[in-house]
Image (cartoon, rainbow, N blue to C red):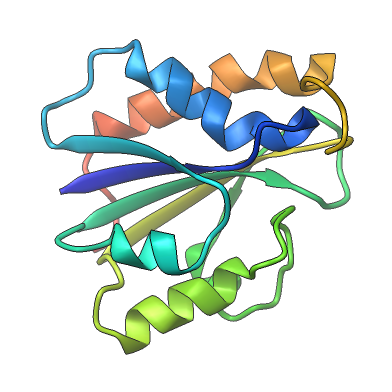
Length: 150
């Protein structure tokens, strides 16, 4: 099974993961693709990994770079905890490491994000909003190809 998870909240630029999932709901994806939105990595993410071979995570990124820039993160780097990119308090690295320890880490993980400007506002800033359809397209295209390393 393939699971695409958007991590986010209803606030400002932090909506990135949820907005990409919203856009993917309107597209023709294979029947083996499950879409979901979570408010943070952690126990809910681990629970949703049952029987998942390929996990695609989408999140807002708090890091240096241009607002609205799309980044693909190496999951090995994320699991090593060398990069605190997520805008959420619960650490993605810890969640992935716990999933591995529990034996439910998917064989293949892709992590995508959009560099954000602000969390506390009513909607995403224009640069982030413009990047959402582009990231949805990137994810849709990647779903048409098998993962390169499993």
